[in-house]
Length: 404
Image 1 (tube, rainbow, N blue to C red):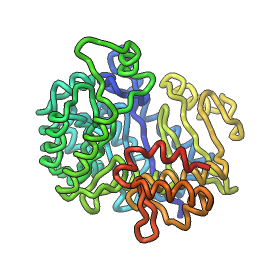
Image 2 (image 1 turned 60 degrees about the vertical axis):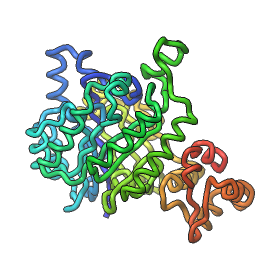
Image 3 (image 1 turned 30 degrees about the vertical axis):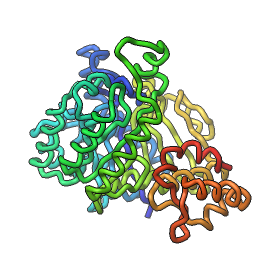
């Protein structure tokens, strides 16, 4: 039976955070009447996309192991939106009885009534975007919640019956001193989340932080140096290890049994269907080909594309690499090899040494991998090659050296 994860992108948020490079539209940019209409139409467009993609790639009988509502800010959507989407997915796919159903929420929108409603619809995992427990750091990041909102959201989640709660933390926000980060690292386990995602700040093009960095010097504003971010990461790893969290992937920690099944499917190169503007899918076709399909990162164009395809008004050549600004890539054998290596090495399980030698080539294994082991960036544990903590900090450079 074909197994599939589903990712649903919500391209709306109350305000755009200064570090965010995911596609989203702040509600302030949507005119009241137009915005209301878009909200009502959006669930219908996603359903149409499911119909189009399911028919084209024969996904109808797929077994769904996880559904993930990400964004943007999914919690700005009404309960009816989640009801309609989950109802359609349950009707048209075979959802596993223990499927992991996740919704991302921002702390300020974690009201008890909405959380009760989400729980009643089958949502069993929440991902709460805490990012920091320091109000000044949150303000600098462009977040609209404060420390108390985080505690309220977690308490409400527990009252609503959620046991699988994940908290996000950002390492290296501007103005995040060692004392501030140490306080963050100590605060997060105190809320007893089942899962923690901790991302090292990367200043990406298209973000407000990127524009600020281009200006170089702004009074009272300083980015955290990379060596400090590395130090903070080591602090967090040590604290979470002491509190019983398993460091199962570069940026992810979990209590036993609460690892994110949705993300593990990504790292295992399992198939997934991405819905909404900017969302990506990874699908394995009957002819042996593997494709990545990424929707256009533009809400208006996405809406036009889905309407055209659904009503048969547009050209839809599946062999074309680019179609109405959607992008389809057919993976080469080299792509598959590289993905297996770097996705496996992101995880605590690593990759079998013999398999890595086959993928990277014996010469690379002998010269490069062994060099990384001697330098303490990798380790060979029971015939599995893994990144050390030091190696995780330099993962991008390591992957670049071993890619074929």
